Length: 120
Image (cartoon, rainbow, N blue to C red; front, side, top):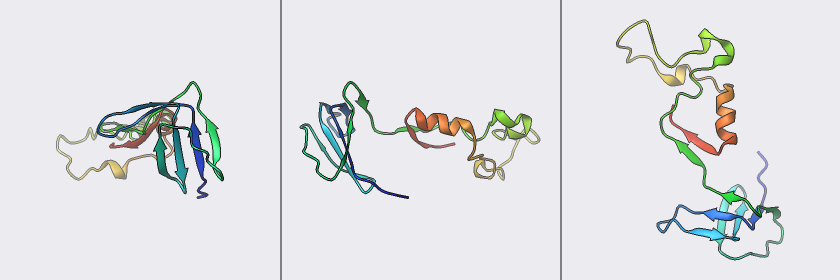
């Protein structure tokens, strides 16, 4: 995976610090795939690709703490519905990890919508 350095500027940044600070027209520096700095000011970012988020809003990744994504893949029909075991009222041996479909289009749609973490 190629890690690049970039700076997101001019957007409204919603932080998740203890003050839940909202920064207007700030800068986020990302170095080697990790947030290096968040500033309420525009930073001169030499060596960083600039992403101008003017008019946009920047949120942390969303967490979906209860989902069935990856378990009910409608694109393949009934064989893709692996969310509930219908053959026995008690199935402690059935695990979602054995049924999840990483190619489920719902996972792509969630990522596009800003979801970065799921508990399925």
